[in-house]
Length: 385
Image 1 (tube, helix red, strand yellow):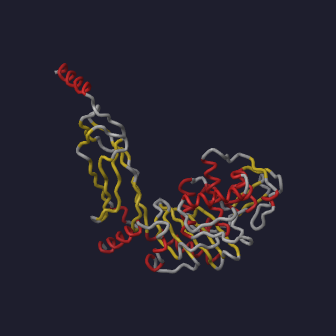
Image 2: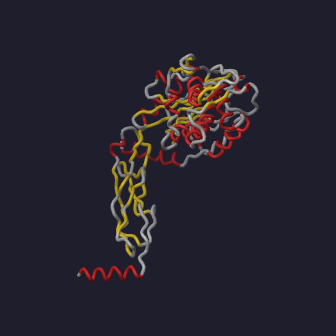
Image 3: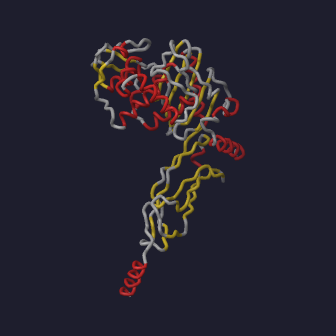
């Protein structure tokens, strides 16, 4: 068992070095006993960003409506930055109302709240609502698409090119994205803007004061335990795609499937990846917090408080219960001390192997004592004596 765990940890250490340009190094044969029925696929743990499974992860493919994960990210960033409110009113343009495919049949000049527009995009994949929202945020679809591509570059999405906000691809030339890039943007959305999960986890709802029903295009929301979202898509060019998110026992997984032959095959593939991830991995998390005092020499204060950084690490299922935590504080430190300075480390060990570490940091500034300060301290000591 120890040899098995050691081998597993060695594999995890190697996986730590994966980044956007090296994700193709992870193959299904290396890390899972099955092959997903799709052109490409990625399973990522959201908290750490670790890739657990990959099949052709960097191949740029048409994503259909999974495009809207980026659309939603920019909308949520506008909301969370205060530039947009859920209660704001969106007036529908003639262009937005002209969108085909999945829609909520918006009329030109119809008014609807941002929240109902958001719900329509997330739950029913409404193309008309997606365009109306992008025009509200960016002024035009063209300007918003520019924002999408700029944000993709910031996130390290190296195999992505957006041409519209919906994923409709009848007239596109090179509207493509890789499975790994979808996982990256999905992670950014659900970890930085968890409000989106309030909408992506809806099975059925209504808009227009109950007059129009919405039904989630993601059937996993109803039939997969722990499913939280996120976005489906399908066109004749893209096949059947999904970015499926799920949460169990404190671990959040993102399963991306691209180019499956049918909705059922796509959903089965996402289920297979999620089941495998939950069955074989767990996340050990330590929130950190207050540490011990560390002695300070030559400072206006004789000691400084410390705070321990939080840590999160992916481990073999069940091994999180066997983690041993070891503290190593500096015996002392010389002033000046700045808040955030490292004053030690905490190491986390599994069967004698270090699997993670966290910094112990000063939680305040301690200035160097002046000559006058030293003299005052001596006099005070003498007078007390």
